[in-house]
Amino acid sequence: MTSTSRFAVLVGLPSLCAGAIWIAVLAVAGITGQHPIWTLQARNLSEAAAFRDGAAVVRRVEAREDLNRPEEVRARVVLPTAASLTPIEAAAATRERGMVQLLLDLGASPDADVWQRAYCISDSDEVRDLLAAHRPSGARDDCAGR
Amino acid sequence: MSRHLIINGLQMPHPGPRAAAYALAWVFAVALAVDLLWMPVQVGDSLGEILAARASPSVWDSFSGSFGAEAYLRPFRIAQIKGLFDLAQGNHYWLVYRGFHALLIVAALLLFIRALRVRTVTDLSAAACAVVVLVGLHTFRGVVQEAFPINHFLEMVVLCLIALNLTQSRPSPWVDVGAVLTFVTGALTLKSGLLVWVVVIAAWVVGWRGVSMRGLAAMTVLVIGYAYVRFVLLSTGVPALSERSSGYLLEMLDPPELQRRFGSQPIWFYAYNMAASVSSVLFTEPQDGVFEMVSSWLNRQPMWRVVLPFATSVLTTALLLWSAARRLRHAARFDDGARMMVVFAAVLAANATLSFAYTKDEIMSVAGAFYAFAIYAAVQDAATKGASLRPAPSIAFALLLCALATGWSIRAVGVHYVLRSQAVKHQIDWVELPERWKRDGSWPYEPAEQQLILRLRDDAIAFTLPNTRLGRPEWPDRLWLE
Image: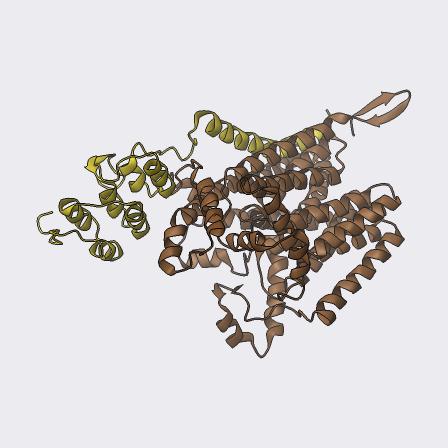
């Protein structure tokens, strides 16, 4: 190898590494089903709502998971500690109106207690307005003490 | 000194570097293709086209119906969308549209490497740098990030690369026919297709004469014919200020604001757009007409993701200018490297002129691809010069170039981040679409149209995509601009 070639190899090496890393990331994601950078995956419907992953929510609902059943959402996803939340509570906690709307469109029907918890868990006016439009009978929007 | 094989007394170029360059192109092509296939068909600027394709009785109707129907002359664009729609046979829309996108990207990478004509290890290293410049340049994002549902800007890149490869080949009537067909396809798809003609003319001037004078004359007649049809027969004119938003200095201006500021003197706005387009390719700033670095600094946004592209582009353009000046100063042989630089200059000027009406990074994607060609020649030069220096300066120069290549490599792999984030955005659009349209009163009445939308939505929702919105590491967002 000439000195020019040695020089050139050093200059070209980063590009070769970039290609190799890219392929390796895709291979790991393809083989394990988990992306090496974005590793967070929802374990249940409530977590899917908490992760704002609308497609995962739809897939789970189509697989007949219960839209109104409380399930554990890991700590620091929407609340500081792990909590048992219904999907609509988890969605309200994200402060994202679209996720709450999606769950309502899919048929979520919170009872008065769940509705009140969802209403109070979110401090977003948009979310609260949406929930107010779907208030079940007997539900109160009094968040004192919650 | 290149590596050679001696066969029957004849010195033949060693196939190794060339094969390795193709292998490298395949690595990037496969990575990009996988990322594209891991993405749903998009909603914005795409669903309307797909619905129109469904309503059209045939490819010919789509082609002929688009004449004079809009302010542009793009009949092939509409015909292609319809052609692929029919190919999907009512079921495989994602596969057909995304598959076509992936095929185009593979073709672009392979044509790019072919045109470099890699022969030596030095060429191979320069080609490796050129590939990351091609993929890492921000204009390239426009050819992968979106599709309408076909990415026509990528088609323009592919057609211009086909044209360049034709000019480098041995002259024959078939090459002429190929060049003419390439031009017609490009010009009737987007106005950027006119760049095919520019590539062939510039290549002919610098000595790549695979396309004969006769072929060149035929293409020139077609350019005149295009201008006649567009401006006289159909009177489609040029895009008006009132048609779309455009970047200007530090902000995006909407059509009313553009009209207010430049309505009486649009020439200043057009001049800004052309200068911004040139600067965008050479220095990565402004992007879409907006000076992102200044804007990020003023708005306290993460700076690395704008400083890295700007710094690498400035240094690379400086390397290009150094190489060009060195060649001029030493009256160097007018080799392929010099040819690539001249063709790039011609394409850059023409591409910027074509984007006079508004600035958009993807419009400059052809010039971006040819920038990578010019950088290939500059790196070849740098490697030759650097190796001839005394040890200490040689090592320092090598480390500088290595750092530069590393910067470009970081930019290139950022495309993966951009495509993952984009895929999630497309998916969210599909999740929300049906109910949103029903609430807005936009939901179609026709059952076949409803089925088509639901089919596309099901395809999009079926993707299990990594969650790039929550609990993500922060470093990708600091390093790469979405």
